[in-house]
Image (cartoon, rainbow over all chains, first blue to last red; front, side, top):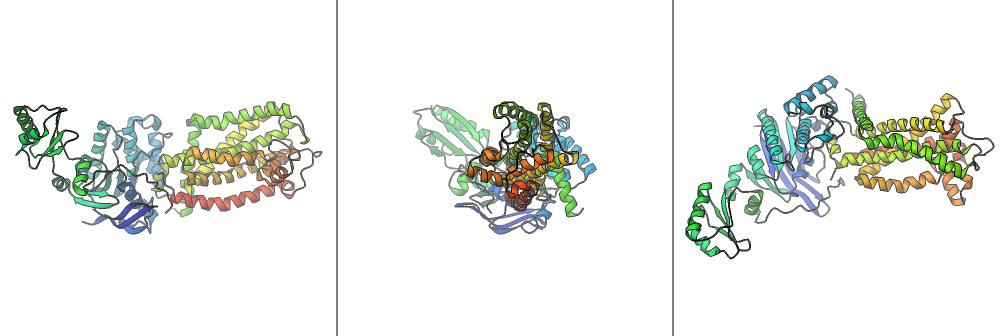
Length: 324
Length: 269
């Protein structure tokens, strides 16, 4: 399959902070790559470089067959970008926003208007088309922003944390829209902080930390590295953790992990709620009281802990100054 | 489409987008229409009566109104910077920069829209001025030329403010930073008082201050000067229109390329 996005050795430094540290990426045409990482890992910087918004200090990138650094304007005709926060104009109506983007892609007046109507229908925004965006909900704004990225039917689309800040309902709605889009054969690079999101939308996931890819594979491949599901119980104050570990022995697919301070016991499992029930039964029989219990799927934190040995860190304050 | 036509079309799309805001954002409408009315009334009645006719020759109100025009359009340039910084902050500039549009069109669309805003303000102020007793005592053509000088100068200042906005990137900082410059530049001038009333060093500054030249040019073109009140014997004041245009050309020659360059590397965060 031909490659739609290829980046080699991208480096971007802001003073002492290295945002990209030799990043390599490759996305085959018509597939979805999820760029997974915590805040400050370099996801947004990578997207900014690949969409011509930022010049890297070193490295090479090619998107849709166009050299990003040499022909930025040519590239902009072939990509669609939707940012972390909805970059829509609050004082324009939904229709005016999309019509404006169409004209700036030089589609012509009639084609811009028609495309705007079409996208508003497709994204379930037609009812609000003539209303100023200021009064719209967060989810509607995001959909409009995404629609803006699709105006010129670009073959390659970049979505930077498309659901960050949305409520669960808005998030699921956004996922449906993105899945629909991908079915049409568009190549997509998506950044996210949520493993669940990458799992659902991406064909392949690149885990990124400190500006470089530390793991690459399908969601299943990554999860097998992380250890899949876990059953977790927390004992009340004064609970006997040692007895709990003894009771849990032999259950699940790995050694139980104990967190003394939190009085928490975590057991890697592969049997879902059945294993949870089994553990609770055993603890009950041993007369151990439980304060909290649950089945947990691996999160970004688990992936990080497994891959890097450190937790996903809070963002360093990076001033993405244009001082390139 | 040729590059030029494309660029002009992009700039027009952005201009229209910016002009729509005049009617939709109450702040902008107030800024464009009500505050100019307030300025004319305030200065005409409060200062006008307190200061009276000094060495200006003509009735103070007639002297004052072109000064208020100049002051308002120069202050209006802050709006250019404020709006651009706001677009940067909201990520709208990121979107524009990811589109295949000409890189000058966002700032050009902003500064051109602000000419539109200034035209509205000037019409409102001129009408208010007529109500309080200001008169145009020249020909229609000269009067139009007077408005054009004001608009062209404000357009140039807009490009300075655009550059400032793309450098500092926060609307509030743009406002504060620009007032530090704009206040002295508009007040140490013949905007509200005759330069002959200013002490030595301030008078020299005022004589060569382009804002003085703009005021002087406007007064001459509106016929609001009085032969009995001589213009300072300084080249800039003797040739105010020419001197203003020299400044306009210089400012544009520096700040158009600088702001476009800054736009190309501007990021929201």
